[in-house]
Length: 246
Ligand SMILES: Nc1ncnc2c1ncn2[C@@H]1O[C@H](COP(=O)(O)OP(=O)(O)OP(=O)(O)O)[C@@H](O)[C@H]1O
Ligand SMILES: [Mg+2]
Image (cartoon, rainbow, N blue to C red; front, side, top):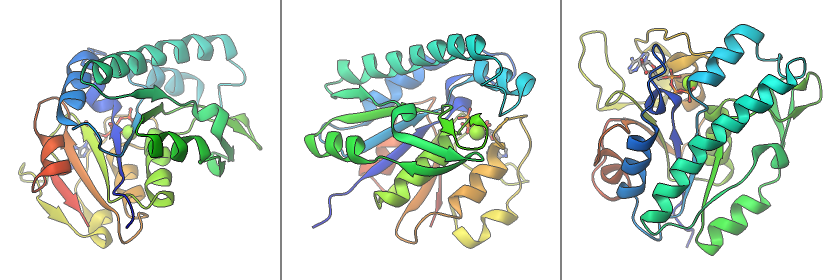
């Protein structure tokens, strides 16, 4: 029998307030670590947060090669988010380890053209929780190009035939125009949903929903809040939470 695999995208929208830069990294890390039971086969991809969005807004998606020192410093800051997540997970008994997207992925004009899945699968099979983040891998056209955590998460969910891809943000799910949270949406309808723009450099909710539309038929997506305990565990072990896209 196929082992049940989950992919969790810990969104930049959960980790930092996109307007003020306020950090929720410790709080979100604690929620994630406490909500996952030991032995769950799960991969975590986290967003880079406020600093990375600011960098890309000012230098562009292809600006890494021309601003190497700035990017290197920023990437160092992103690794602090990874470290906080890993610390919380280890404190809760999970063998969380960082895997570098740069060493596994290649892109061409910003799209994934190669992904060495061996390390991801090998560590998952041993019971580790692999963690990676949105990054800027080598790109055959641009030298280096920013790759969103959503793209990484969708790619992994499809290739590993995940049962679900869970997007954790700052809101309890997809909000409709009347303010209520949608419980369930069909993949073919994601393009019609109401969204607003938060100036997310990798396309925000609109692009996230378009990517969700590309998931394998067997993989559901959930959009939940990661700023409070319980929603993630309801998706993993209960009857679901937030918005389910199936
Ligand atoms: N209909 C909607 N329902 C819920 N959130 C929405 C909707 N439309 C837009 N949003 C916005 O989308 C944001 C989440 O998407 P966004 O791409 O900004 O975050 P993220 O993917 O978590 O961050 P990152 O790309 O940094 O990892 C929420 O913070 C919310 O403000
Ligand atoms: Mg985003």
